[in-house]
Length: 46
Image (cartoon, rainbow, N blue to C red):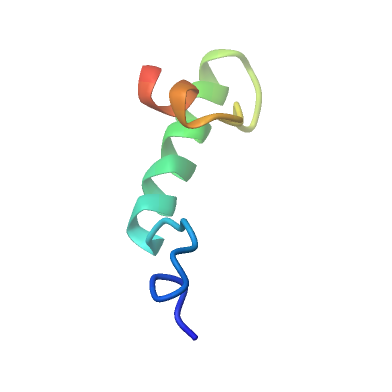
């Protein structure tokens, strides 16, 4: 069964790639490989 049919929250592959790039960009600012966004709110604030 598809996730959408079961109303399971998910993100698309394109959205995941965007998040991945933003985590990497944030990490560069602090000398890390990445800065993980642990909540949706943190992702939106960047």
